[in-house]
Length: 277
Image 1 (cartoon, rainbow, N blue to C red):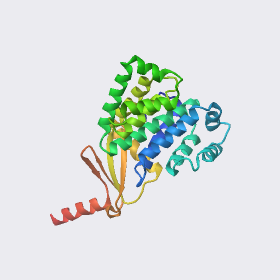
Image 2: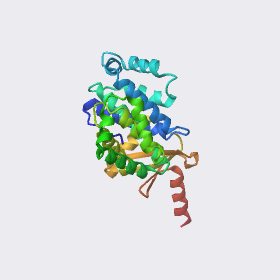
Image 3: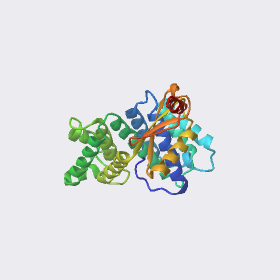
Image 4: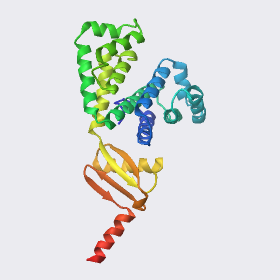
């Protein structure tokens, strides 16, 4: 689930589509979640710092193809292929206001970092470390002032976070803390960290559907499956897809220990057991 961003109308739909695409890309073989997060944080900062660019990437007077072409022109060679794929999809979407794109990019970057922590089985640790860092900053006037000042600048703030955390915390914690300190965009560091903590908590509460299919699903099929599972369980469901040609069609889905199996192989095995008596 994306970080808790309050958006209206088309922006909510664009963010949801972006999150689905992010999860699919992160679950692809060989995808580096840390690189993904780094790329998206970089794009977040670029878009946040340039209002004219932000408008160009979101204004409805440009076609979706033109907006995607502009993103490709700016980012090709600077971010990974999967990151460019995701950003291109985002700028093709409609946004209620241009700043929603910035919020979405940051939320997706946070979730990429949290995905890496989850895959390394340290999501709880990252959540705890972010909370403790936020409490440390909130309780220390000198730290609050150092992070709040426009000077000494991002490099000094980055160094300060390193001094406080680098040998003590998970790499995802360090990267998220740096982002909160260096790019708060008018917010206090503690407020940014709280937003990141909401994203971590939301991710931890998600149900995960382990899905086995005979062949890859299209984006439309994944979206319909996610919607169907959400309606069935009444909660957001994250789909992890594995390909196994031996299941011969259909899907085998495991959610919270419950198996949903409508594959041809399952039906054949059931038929064999019935015949055998």
